[in-house]
Image (cartoon, rainbow, N blue to C red; front, side, top):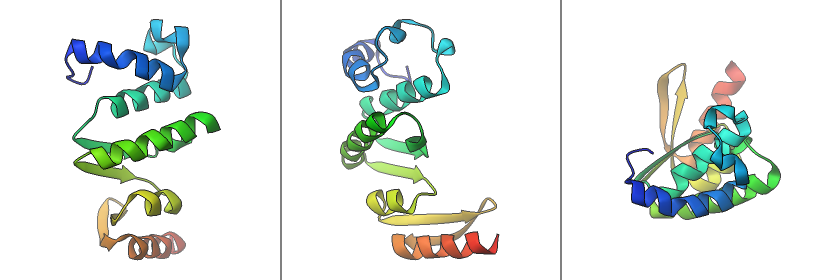
Length: 130
């Protein structure tokens, strides 16, 4: 799993099982999971693997409200323990909560790099032009 030693993966299983609430489904092949179940598992694996670089792309749309709250709390902890955190999102609230610097892209090109509030203003401007 993601280059993590087998012993470490085994030690992560109880935390992942509790976090995802997938229960007996953890014994089934992932190909049998719904999209939401798979997202819970992948998100938990990323967070409990203690990465040096954490990349998150709009993960908060998956799962019920209780899972989203658990995910948000775990993510907050993980962000502060990561060396680098890269978060792709369209949510101004989440960006304000997690990001001190932002990159705004439009049609695959960088149009702004800088402080969060200015980046969100630039994003709003670009969105209105579209």
